[in-house]
Amino acid sequence: MRLNEVFIFPFDDVKKGANVIIYGFGSVGRSFINQFTTLNYGTLVAVADRGADKFEHVRYLVILPEEIQKYSYDYVI
Image (cartoon, rainbow, N blue to C red; front, top):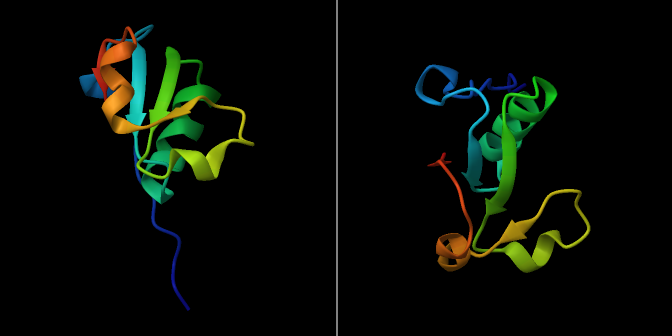
């Protein structure tokens, strides 16, 4: 039986209220998204993922990594 891994968003490294793009929609990215949005820590601008086309029915904007420069953000996590 595998234990659920916990991935903690790097709150100490990100200013509260920041505009953030999270890189990756895997288990780490989803964990970060959940923590960041649940705490209303800032604005989730987008999630960048190489498989962005697989995530068109999620409630977040999912973009390709090469599109990151098109957006205004403070951090890419």
